[in-house]
Length: 238
Image (cartoon, rainbow, N blue to C red; front, side, top):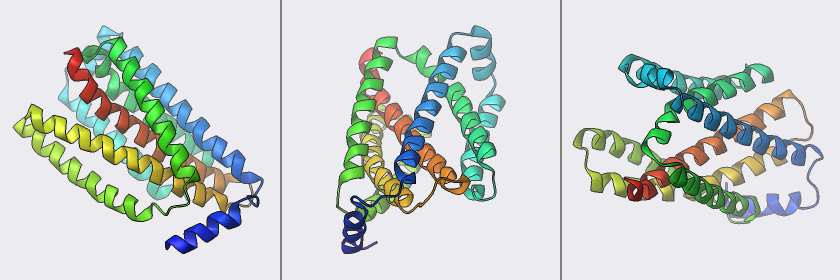
């Protein structure tokens, strides 16, 4: 999208947004917040249950099954969102939040509650600032977003390599780069979601599914930003 076209769209939308737009934006953040709460409760519940924690982390088969299930859910919901009903898509989103919570239960074992709370607050503040920036800026962030997406692919590859090399210094570098990537992606995704929902004239199942996908996108941005920050600040806790 060219910058002039974006600015024209934003100017046209000022004061002329549909009645459905604010309701859809609220749904994005309500669904995202709900998913974060579900993930947090699940993670804490698993971490405080020795039986569940042992069952989860004593079997590589269960871990791989969870990872595959999470990937399948994200890819499946994204690819088939137009074919799914809103209730089914919402259920799958909640299921993904639960599975992700089970996967993240280890943070309550590896880090103290103080560090987790501190990093969560830092993440929430950083995320909030970048989401607001992405929402209100008149600058077209799409070119930056595409670069960040390519950088994300690179960091995934680097993480896989470091899984075998186990370099602490390289892991720290990856964490800082990861924070930078997801800070930028938060702003980009916020702008994309606004522009996408601003074109919706009414509140119906199709537009609510768009809002749900926006919530999933921002949820993933928040979780990844939190995890990278935790790896940085958590070093002082070890």
